[in-house]
Image (cartoon, rainbow over all chains, first blue to last red; front, side, top):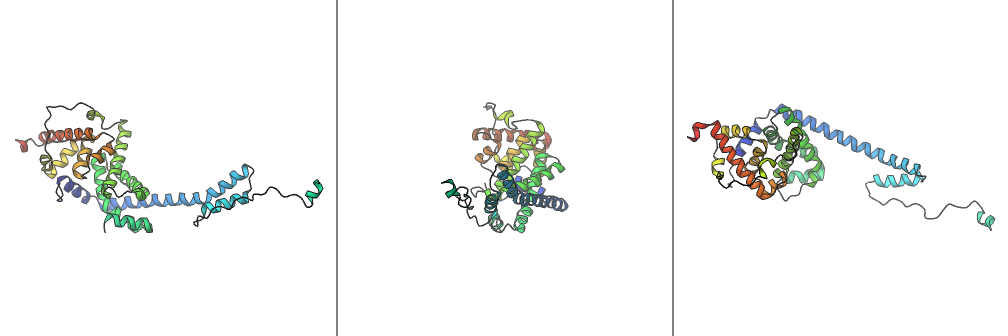
Length: 101
Length: 185
């Protein structure tokens, strides 16, 4: 097909130029309101997801402080891996090892 | 500034000004298409807004294999097809005659005849055509989409699309003859 606009393309051009500028303005406002709402939802998720992680961790009997670290790592832009929990088990009371012996 | 450059700038900077350039460039055309397909100003306005939201949210997924306009219009057609399907409670909008066997006696209307229709006649003819015929003609002649691109949008085989276009052209010619009998005598 040649590069010159055909009758269908000319019709679209004609119809698009006939659109009232006020309508374009109104739709633009609606569109940017939607974008703002989406941005707000994103920000709310950023705030509440780490809190929900804490609640879930606490509910399953985990350590919230390490969950905080996990959530912080989840939110951080640096993408550093979360600090792993300590590998050793619970500590014994003072002199506990001797008492057991 | 070309579309691709604006898109790259937008993806790098997330600047609203870049999206505004695309919006100003495509608003009229998307709205005109929505009006032409959906035939309702309020519905077309809502549709245009939702289509731009989809474009905005999916801009990073745009693959530069197709023209940006083709990608934008395919989102527009998909939205309009879904809307009509929901409204008419019709699952397959393009089923009516695409699946029928071809009529061998059917004469092919040449592209030249279709492309020589005067603008005012063309607007009336398109208005009187069924939704599915109007859409395939717009995809082929207004957006210069390939048969493959059309087949992906309407979810039919390429041979079914060719048959659909052939029949849509025949219907357009019949409609033109009915609306403007003096021209064809």
